Length: 79
Image 1 (cartoon, one colour):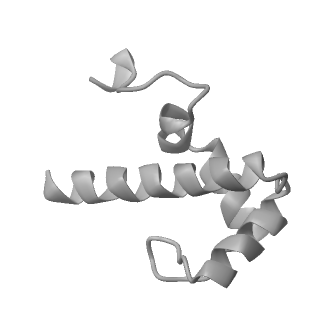
Image 2: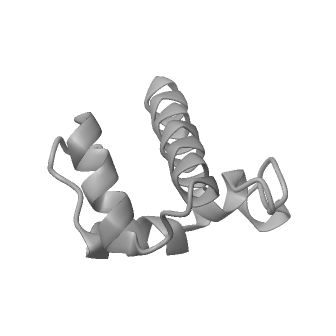
């Protein structure tokens, strides 16, 4: 349960950073990756961000769940 909370906190933080970058006009996955790397943010595994990892993150169910345009909470199918 603790691991899940840590993952959710990570996802929320990254989503907030992505939305802030998008609000400032940075929308391309590589540009967002460059923004993260400049700020010292790493992936959950401690790696540098790439355009591909940003795109993959954005298409994940977790990221979609916490995007401000999406619905909050868990999908019914997930329980």
